[in-house]
Image (cartoon, rainbow, N blue to C red; front, side):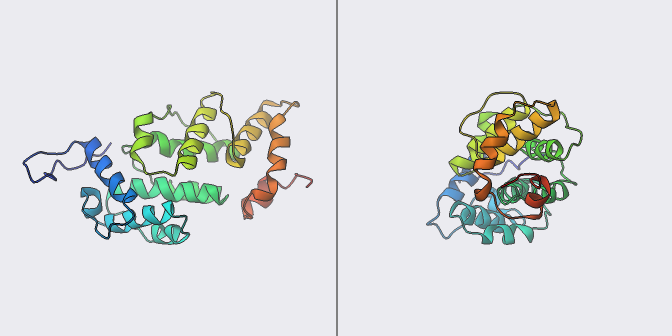
Length: 217
């Protein structure tokens, strides 16, 4: 796990804690009307680019993924926050294979359980070994400026991987649940029919043609 610096961001001689640095950055991302980037994280190498990408994501602007692809990751804190968002966007666009490539050189940081949720999603879908992971602390989820529906989805995926019940699942969760039932050899798989009903809403991608090729729709 890497540490944020303990710099004085208040002008009053007070050093912000690690949690306060993330809270400061999140508030900056949420302040979409501001033209300034004053948080400590935004001041890190490529931090302004990262913050802008997160603001675009929250406005459903597809340019966010293009910007993130150009972040080289010279700073581990910025790189981890980039990976959290870019893997989310790949997942929502059904580009699961790219997630594995993106996280191949992941350095354990402050949001490892979120990153491991992405890794294990890919592993389960592609019948690979699942790595040890934990339930994501709600505090950690709340540090990240996710859209509410995406925060719920990531929480659900983490719950499913840890065999906890979820409800109101999107096609992303249903894909995982369906795969788990297939691996169990469960012939009474209710998730397959639910997934078929949402098939038309799943983005077109190479993975869709590969993973759902047996769906007769």
